[in-house]
Amino acid sequence: MLDPTVARWDVSPPETPEPPPREERGPGPWPAICEQFALRILASAYQMGAHLEAVEADEQDPERLERLYRIDHANTRIRRHAENLQVLLGRRVEDADPQTVPLVDVVRAAASAVEHYPRIRIGHVVELAVVEFAADDVIRVLTELLDNATRFSPPTAPVTVSAFVTEDGGVLLRVEDAGVGLHPDHLTQLNALLSGRPAVPVALDPAAHLGLAVVAHLAVAHRLRVTLTTRPAGGTTATVAVPGALLCEIPAPDPAAAAPAPPAWPPAGHRTDPWSTPMATPHHGADTPTVRLATLDAPAGEPPPTTGPPTAGLPRRVPESVRDRVPAPRPAADAGAGSPPEAWPDETAAFAAGVSDARTPTDGEGRQ
Image (spheres, rainbow, N blue to C red):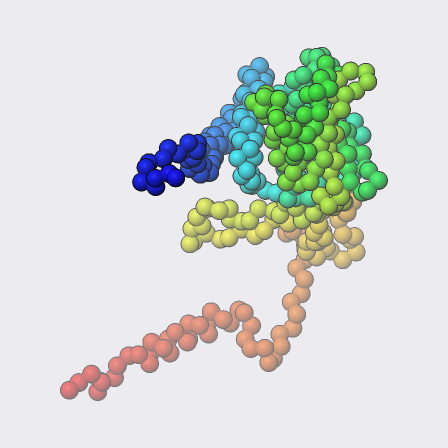
């Protein structure tokens, strides 16, 4: 028997201590820092745009004006990159004036924000509009696809964009280029990225596809279906399926907004002197009926002088003297109408004398 007091060796393997649970790190301060950078860049871009507009309005030299336009266009692209940074941070870009935009204006706005915009050709575009809460994001999606198409295609080759109605009531935007195309493996991974389900592991460098990353974020937010395909003749076709919930008919123009109201008088900031007479509101001759001015009575038996056709607009003066005309007889005075005008000065003088006599104190007045 073994003596229980004798020490025994424990030959079992030692227990490995479990590592402490890994703390999940949050995003940290970097998203907020990047957002502030994006906002500051946007503010600087808007300020520069205002200064450029003022300089362009005063510039008369065509050469310098062309250079200013190039600088203005570069400033537009800077603003676009700052907005894309906000999209990648998951922040919604607040637009100053959201409104319903026709599809043809969506295409034009997207093309105008691309560096190589002269190469873009607009094909058939259906006459529909994008609702106001999605119009600017659809413009951003189309802008990035057009930018990729112009960058990765020959510098002399055009890029065509068009829009067609689909069977389910949506619209299919097509961007076609004549570039070198994409490798099949890359095409699969890029389509997975655009669908919101990127392939794992990611074999593509995210920094090389910043524009498509922006497209992927906006496509998921608005349920757009973005797909890249290879063209048989060479190049790539990018399609954007816009659902019918984001579309509407083109709104009719507002007649009140089309015709500006006449400026108020006096204008703002104008000081009217207290002794000046306010000017009457000018009338428009096209809307105001012609008013015939009263003329002197013509002698008996003579026809009234002709002043030309009635379409002349204003009456014409006739060169003749009024001294040769016999004045018209005055109407008989009405007995109950009071004194004639010729007697008014005498009556006024008599009234003033009576008031003066009434105010003259008598001998007994004013004494104690």
